[in-house]
Image 1 (cartoon, rainbow, N blue to C red):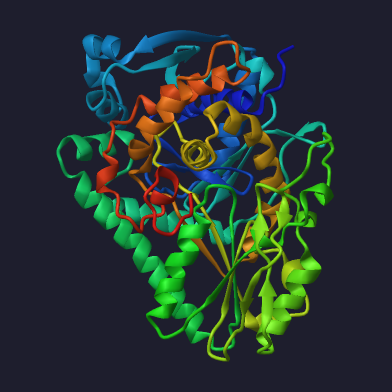
Image 2 (cartoon, rainbow, N blue to C red):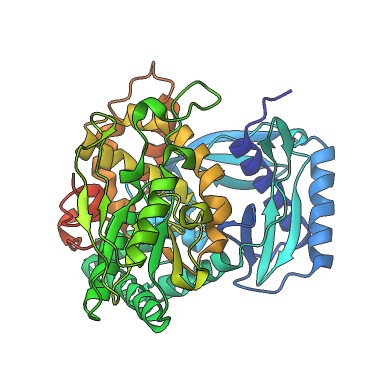
Length: 489
């Protein structure tokens, strides 16, 4: 029996799904779009409505393939081999990728005569993937595979991320505006010398969205506290400062408060189930002091905001004395910004909640997605190397704990936000590529993170390099590659 691996299970199930559709609806073209509702959102033939009856037929065929225990054959190919063989028989999105990169490698998998390629490993038999779920959603359907939850392998519970779905749809429109759909189209834009134009459009779209958020806040005249939350490497610092500038341009001067300054002394940080200090839990913050400070500020009182020294793990002896005028408001930034216990006792009409994250990313092609957590991981690798002198191995070592904390303390609250902002940039991996590669190649074969480093390097090989000199200083990306005037490195 194969050991359960969530990612490998999902990708193998995806091959079974593709095979089942090819068997009964051979003319259909699938596009795997984004994570949604504890699954993956998929569309057929653009955005064709998918009936429950059709999904039932697909699911029945998948079950047949699984029960037959079909062998999955793996071959290792390079783009050079395919180019020499016959590029005309390749899907247009994949052909564009092959035409705009150097020699790249991938795995070709064959299931009972059906072939598709993946950049990661699959199981060698369909017998191992007998648990999945399909249901109709919006202009496509949701495809769910199991995860290990509290030691039990099961399909994740049903949720409906309506606000996230709206963001994904908006992002799709943005990509249409920029005429970039997959990595191949981004590479072509870069190779043809049009990348500066794409960057300017992408950054302008970000700025337009921030303007609209600022306008909405100002229209709701009772707002006194703006909370900004998001997972690691989302760009919270840059976003918060850019929002502050937009509000200042409208004659409002927000007071910036970071939740990081409310950490308790390191000796009192709670211990997690593995015996390590849990900096991700809200119990690591002095919530009582924060609540008292916020209420006093809203009453017009003078308050001393603490300043936390991360090198010593203690608060500095003296904080910053501040006072809030009647016309101004507070911007409260940190990973727990959507948790109501932070602002207990403050009326909801005085609070505006913003959730930000790198939510979308270009697909490698229509069948192969890049998880946005992977993009955040790349951002973190580069920033850690610049600001903390951490190497990639140290960042990867802590990443699982960071992700676990996000699942527990951040993601459950994201739909509580008044607005969701997607900090992803269509061009960013091309810019991150040289710095990430430089760090990853240092990881030795003896390291437990070697295979992950190789996987990331393989993914980066599909992108052409984009010069960081084209990135504006106010860009969220600058927070990670250096040179931002919003971030203290």
